[in-house]
Structures are given as structure tokens and as C-alpha cells.
Length: 337
Ligand SMILES: NC(=O)c1ccc[n+]([C@@H]2O[C@H](COP(=O)([O-])OP(=O)(O)OC[C@H]3O[C@@H](n4cnc5c(N)ncnc54)[C@H](OP(=O)(O)O)[C@@H]3O)[C@@H](O)[C@H]2O)c1
Image 1 (cartoon, rainbow, N blue to C red):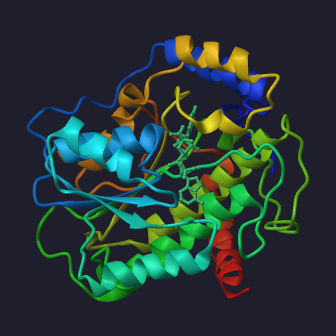
Image 2 (image 1 turned 30 degrees about the horizontal axis):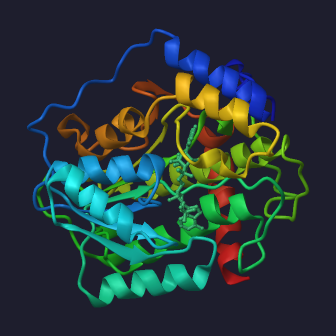
Image 3 (image 1 turned 90 degrees about the horizontal axis):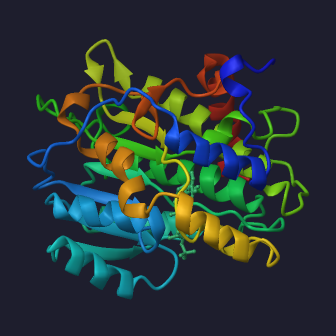
């Protein structure tokens, strides 16, 4: 499949991805809207994955500040981050649930725990992300970025929907009532999904080799595959009666976070300076995440894609219904491996 004009921006290696990401921050674009202080989440429960660091931590803080009960889905010790989120948000309704998206058994255990506790999730923010400098594998043998951004997230959502932990009529037969405020799923994708390795069904999910410079192509690929899968999920979670569960994606732009922790040592000093000066703080970068999670104007809407605060279409391959349906079918096979 040929790439559309919108897909040709070069985010394909760490240097061009950084330069393009910074340029994006300064391009003038139409904003989708601005969240007001009275758009609150009192009484809502939100799961935020990777909430102990960077964007996830800032998002969790803002959701807690807006009144949500926040579950931090984290793979490592998040007790210090939880304390900071409580202090910064002024809310005690913040807790940690163990979740390692690189291990499907951990995903199942997390879902079982939430189900057993009778937790109902009004929002799920799939924020956790990783960029290893060399190919690593998940516990079940998937390439790490593919495994975390796609396979782990896919199982998490399928199980939460099947269990009714995310209330939904489609898979759990739990009608979401007459309330216009349906549950929402928000995936932190990346503009690199436009220029990463395209989806090829002959090789999808196969082991890949890459260098530190080549890791961004695989990173973009993993975000593309999940973005495509979510287009199919959004279709399945709506009917002529309306939206059952909303499904949105976004790119937050370049963030001064810990994402480059695995960058080659030679790049780190330059990267630290560039990120510190030019990249947005997590507190600023979380605006589109929080907007998609909380904005009242988005009730009953689904399949939106934001780049920063501007609405766009995702890449042509993600939007292609045949591609996303096939990604869905292949995804089922990965979960049976
Ligand atoms: N930084 C950017 O410029 C940028 C640009 C576009 C999109 N994004 C996306 O934004 C999201 C947040 O990244 P960030 O910039 O805030 O980076 P970050 O500070 O490195 O945070 C990433 C978070 O994901 C967690 N994580 C990684 N692997 C995981 C796993 N297997 N299971 C559960 N959690 C896992 C990390 O946990 P640990 O602390 O335990 O490692 C951490 O909490 C990612 O999806 C990223 O792809 C970032």
C-alpha cells in the first residue's frame, strides 16, 4: 500500500523524529477545544498505565485533581509516585495495581484482581510505552515494543471488556444505561506511527532486528498496529443505537520524560539538553490525554485522533477497514500462541 501525503513526514530515526517533533510544537494549528475547570470526573474510576513516570504520572495527577479515583497500572514500585500524585492533586483516591504489559500472565492477573474487587472502569488510559535500545522480548516472546504497545494492551482491553470491568453491552451485556457519558479508552500513540515500518501481514509479529537508530521504525510500527486495531475496536463498540464505549488515540508531541532512558550513552548529554529546552513538560503534554478522557463535548463520539490538541486522521493503513479487521484477526492468533 502506498503512503498518503499525510504519512510522509519523517519520524523514522531518533534524530529526524526529534527535529520533526519539536517543529510540530511550534506549528500553528486549530485546537479541538479547551477543558474547563468544571469538567470534572467525580465518581469516575480511571486506570492509567505507566502512571509512575512522565506523561502517565502527569495524567494521573490531573485526573485525580479533577475528582477521579485513579488506579495506577505499573510494573515497578510506584509507591513514591503515588505519594507525589496524592500531594500534587490533593486527592487520596489514588492507588497502585500491578501490571506488566510485557507479561500476558501479569495482564490476566491484573484483570482478575479488578474483577474480583468489583471495580468498574469509566476510563482506561493506555499510556505505558517503551523504547529499548536493542531488541528485547516479552515473556511470551514478542518483540518488546510490539508486545507492550500492541499485544499486552490488546489483551488488557479484551479482558476488561469481557469481564464488564469496562461496562459495555457489546461483550459483557452490561448496558451503559441512558447516561450520555459512556466509558472511554484513550491510547497514547505517536506521530511516528505514520513513518514506522508499515503493516505487512506476511511478517506481522515476527522477531525483528534493529539498531538504536532503527528502534524508532519498530516503535512507530508497534503504535501503528495498535492504532489500527483500535479503529476496529471502535467499530465493534458502536451500533445504530450509538457508541457503547468510546475509543480514541493521540500523540502528545515530544515530552521531556524518561522515554529516552535507553538511548545510546553518546546521545544522552545532547538529548538531555534538547529535551530540557525544547520538549514539553509532562504536565503540559498531558493536555490532549486529559481532554480525550474528560471533555464533555466528546460524549458519544468515538475514533478521534489528536496530535497535540489538533484533530487529524491517523495514518491511511490504520484507517483502512480491511487492514484493521485483519490486524484484529491476527491479534486473536497472537493471544492463542
Ligand atoms: N516522550 C515522548 O517524546 C513521546 C512522544 C510521543 C508519544 N509518547 C508516548 O507517551 C507514553 C508515555 O511515555 P513517557 O514519555 O511518559 O515515557 P516514560 O517517562 O518512560 O514513561 C513510560 C511509562 O511506561 C511504563 N512501562 C514501560 N513498559 C511497561 C510495561 N511492560 N508494563 C507496564 N508499564 C510499562 C514505564 O514504567 P517503568 O517506569 O517501570 O519503566 C513508565 O511508567 C508512551 O506510550 C510513549 O510511547 C512519548
